[in-house]
Amino acid sequence: MIDFGLMPIANGFLSPENVEGEDWFPLAVVVCSRCTMVQLRDVIPPERLFPADYVFHSSTSAGMASHFEEFAHALLREVSGRNDAFIVEIGSNDGILLRHVAAAGIRHVGVEPAGRVADVARSRGVNTESRFFDSAVAAELRAEHGAAHVIVSANVICHIAAIHEVAAGVAHLLHPEGIFVFEDPYLGDILELASFDQMYDEHVFYFSLASVQYLFAQYGLEVVDVMRQRVHGGSMRYFLAHAGSRAASDRVAEMRAREEELKLGSAATYDTFRARVAAKREALRSLLERLRSEGRRVVGYAATSKSTTTIVYCGLTQEHLEFICDTTPAKQGKVSPGAHIPVRPHQAFVADYPDYAVLFAWNHLTEVLAKEQDFTQGGGRFIAYVPEVRTLDATS
Ligand code: TMP
Image (cartoon, rainbow, N blue to C red; front, side, top):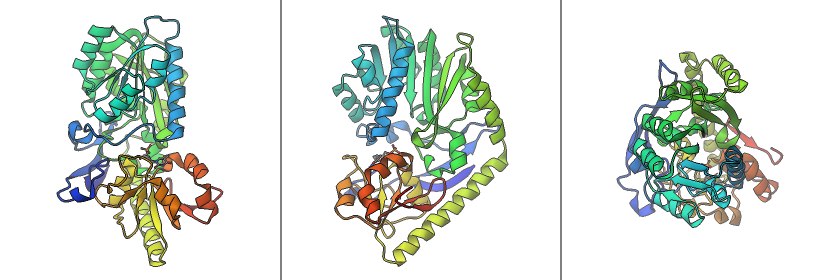
């Protein structure tokens, strides 16, 4: 579908003294002609992507915190009335969701391999197992706690190359009347927005309803509902149950019909995507080249994992972006993967506003614009590249 060539590890922010010998890996996305699953052609071992000191913390945005609070309450409604309720989260990160389950006194386990974020979750009262979820972990959890009434996962299933292990584990661990709910960035939105920066090493799968149905049907699980979500630049929440245990909502058939219109099985769909992405690269590069030649100060706003794809694919360097500001302490003082652009605290942005800031956290646009009114009202401008490359004015 699209080949980006070699890329560094997307979340592999480096100490400036360690930039020598950085590893590069092929990044290419392909489409399965049988089931239309869109996925990475090559995968990097998960131990390499999610080390103990993994720097991505879910709780970095107020918008995500409220999204997960609402999500947790919807799951708690699902188990209300059961005094033995048991909820499992696959990839519970720093406990952004399960802390609400813990606070409600509901039995739960978060399975989170990245040690540092798992410790944050534990400090919030979330029972956390530092492991990669697979069928063996599922069997152990079931033996110890019984079947799960809810299994939940957000922005995690699409990261797991061993997806058949996950599906088998979920099918085993899920209570006969239970529900498996997960959400991930949605292929339909990626194609519509040409959000090529969703493509990086951690995102092994780019799900559609069609590909999710095909995959989980092999394990006796059926999609019984779907809900589109605004988070992460457009996501889909899928609800699955043991086949025949629940009636499917009309939304499932409606979404399938909409996907037929998207022609996910047609090569022309991906040709269009590729052409739009190449055009955006040229537009972003030439805008930044022009600003550089005019002597404007430009920085990057938020050192997101997505920014690695954008920066490296578009060939951006410190000549284009003086630094990238980010609120995550673990990223500050480091340099970006590949291009080695310094990452500085948000205060560095506020202390001396640049003329322009490339909005790498475009999925948090509303939150960022609300927060940065002093910058925009003082004449500063954000540059966006999703869906198109453009400069935002103060009223955007
Ligand atoms: P993501 O949620 O798109 O993955 O990006 C989160 C990253 O963006 C994380 O490194 C924190 C950073 N960020 C900021 O620096 N400032 C902000 O206002 C927001 C919303 C995120």
